[in-house]
Length: 176
Ligand SMILES: CC(C)(COP(=O)(O)OP(=O)(O)OC[C@H]1O[C@@H](n2cnc3c(N)ncnc32)[C@H](O)[C@@H]1OP(=O)(O)O)[C@@H](O)C(=O)NCCC(=O)NCCS
Image (cartoon, rainbow, N blue to C red; front, side, top):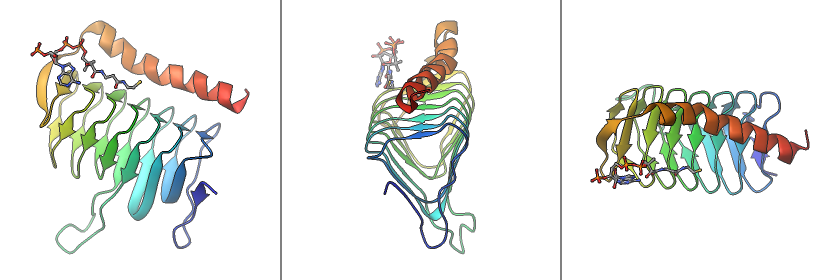
């Protein structure tokens, strides 16, 4: 079973979500509407919660996890992903907060306490160290990441288009 409880908490799905049968979705995970989760994604909402916004896609092999609450850090680090976000293949998102219309390139690693504003491009293979703040309208690349340049108009439009493409693709998989 790819959708499982942790203790008594089951993931909750909005309308028209597609969860590939090979993905594993555990515990306190809340998906909005039209979310798609592709083969071999592992998402574990056990020691904190995971939230995934409407129309967001999580592509193949990506790992989503969180950090527990402690006396020094009472909220811990939940993982919050906004709307119309594209998470490429084989990314690692851990305890970070992403806004809306973001593209996370293939193989990127985003660590605890990072916050990403709306409309950001994160290049393939980028490492975003803990607690960094990424500003709206920019391309970030590299390991460790650097703020490379402002996005152009085509790239800004592509952020929403990419999410829409994945909504249409998951509708095919759902047979809608
Ligand atoms: C980030 C990205 C969009 C940049 O595309 P681009 O238009 O070719 O970028 P630019 O030509 O403006 O490159 C700017 C600089 O960043 C560098 N760069 C581009 N992508 C990079 C990456 N992923 N990591 C490190 N450096 C990168 C370029 O070499 C260039 O460096 P320079 O200024 O020293 O010459 C693209 O490389 C990328 O990573 N796309 C992600 C695609 C993806 O994973 N999609 C999800 C799966 S569907």
